[in-house]
Length: 342
Image (cartoon, rainbow, N blue to C red):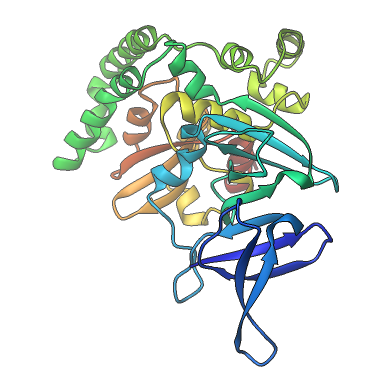
């Protein structure tokens, strides 16, 4: 059974559970409680609905039951098509899908934002004014053989090895490491450069342009603005110019680097987690801790192309570091919130 919210073309809404749904069937049944607390089986004509929102499952306490983080956060990067759906009533929603055919009666959409309360959404084509369909960045890059999953995995192999080594033994203090610090830094920089060359990683602007998310004119416009605003990254400028959204950037990086991503605009980070790293480290690396799971510290980054950034972070915490992608503008806002300048 799936708990759903059914939105009708008339503007009416109903909620309840459905056992099964097939867009090709003219009628489906919604189980919903009536005023007396009893369950009614309500027949609903498929042609009369605008959309069906399939909500994520909850436990007995009302908390959403999450799947594994990797499934939930990179699902949008795994599905090949990105859709922006404009309804006839003016509503606009974004998501991804395995396939889209304008001649079908309807289609399913998976929300791009991993924080969304819905697992998937069925959309009646009769309610739609326009669908903007684009191929997702990660899939396009892999299809064009600009980068492979094997190359991505290899780029993080050394980082994982370092984590496992650290997890298996006692970690030295920062003071004990200080004698060999600069030698380690040089090794990291050399290794990073080799890994970047190996994986043929392109600049963010070039990746987004190649995937058709922006035009060459829009990219040139943003690059010119960046010359005037040198303190801002290209992604932030593209967002400021409304050429692209923060979600687009997260999906672009997450799908290319095969990492999870998180929407910091809808996440309230506990104070004790956000400040678990030194302020100097957080500001210099442009990162922010977002969650602690047992001995794992989840840290949001905006520049995964710095292949060993996890190793840099690891030097300042006894926990195993897990990296997730987040929009740089949201990371900077979080840093200013939890580390306000005096």
